[in-house]
Amino acid sequence: MTLPYAFTPEGVNEARSTGEPLFHTFLKSREPFEGLLRDHPWLKPPSTRAPLDLEGDHYWNTTTGDQHPDWVGVDLPKPTQSLAQMRSDFDVWGYTLVEEGLSPLQCKKFLSRLLAQAEAEAAIGIDLKTPSGQYVPCLINKGDCFRGAIEHDPEHVQAGPLIEAFLDELLGHGWICHSFLANGADPGGYPQGLHLDQGPLLPWVTEVAPALVNTMFIPQAVDDENGGTLIIPGSHKLIMRAGSAGSIDSVPRPINLKAPAGTLMVFDGRVMHGTGVNRTDQRRFVATMSNVKSWMRQQENWVVSTRPEVIQAASAKLLHRMGMQSLTWGATVEGFGLAARGWAGDRLGNIQKFREAQDRGDYRRVGILNPADAAHLSASDFTLGEVNAWVQSANA
Ligand SMILES: [Fe+2]
Image (cartoon, rainbow, N blue to C red; front, top):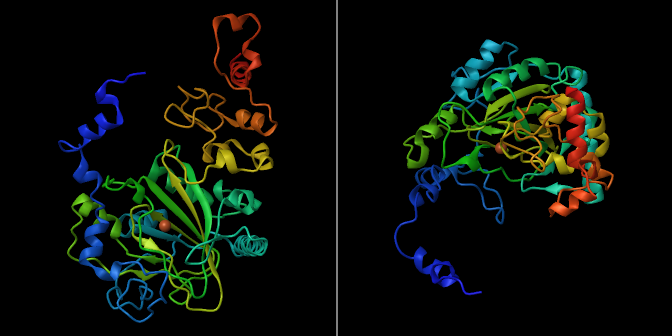
């Protein structure tokens, strides 16, 4: 086959070498971080090939807000159960702390399940190591307390209903779960680079409100000794204002989060944060449930990774939160779900039956067809046809 010259590799390369690519300056700017790291060298992450400098002027050598000279006396968020206070703290500082979000018993169960899982994964050799410590990913498969956390079930998270209502107002009704994983800070580990969890959106900025909101479960008390999360209070507004220009004259110093066991932190996906340095001889875990708009790609691909038993027992809310309720803008299966609103419990858009067919080894997809095939095939020969019939039976 002879291609027109303009469509050949040589022709495409020649065309690309002339003129200016559209949006180049914006898309390749690497801002605001390029400018931030240039102007404020203390923000640079450490080399993991060298011993960690625990003395110098680096973002990880800090302390809690009540002891930090730049923050002492500032009214930073304190654990609260008041929605009015949560709104105010989240707006001004980019995070809020929910007091006794886990009851003492819930907290104990959460932590013991998490520690046992982490230990087992490490002993078996399937642990996910990071420079800071250990991740325990995909918690949905690893204990009913984690399933309950994703559902904001008050049996497992006593503050669940309040946090769910808050997430509804922050992200809009219909948000879904991006991932739920535990982050370890082990003795001798490195701090995470300070980052924004909605950083992949950069250089686009969402100036008015976040596109991602985290709920961090804190099952062990955290402070400046055991690697309490590093956070720059108020940085969500700072970063968004800097945008793609990347120029910020003055960057406030981070603090280590200080919170008692059982606290939940709800924080804005635009706030600068990272795992702190654990200077004790005990491991320290927190667990982060991240949440996004309903059409965004999820960090954890729950549709593939969730255990069949969890899916079979899942409530409509859990299926929705895992992204198994497709809608016009996301997660359709062979077109199933187009025109769906993405509501929990709506058969139109519920893709559970496709996944169950796959688990049985019986997912029959629509492939190449010709009109003559209609003589020996009907809709029920395909999983899509069966699911459509199931939807229609509810409407009958
Ligand atoms: Fe993060």
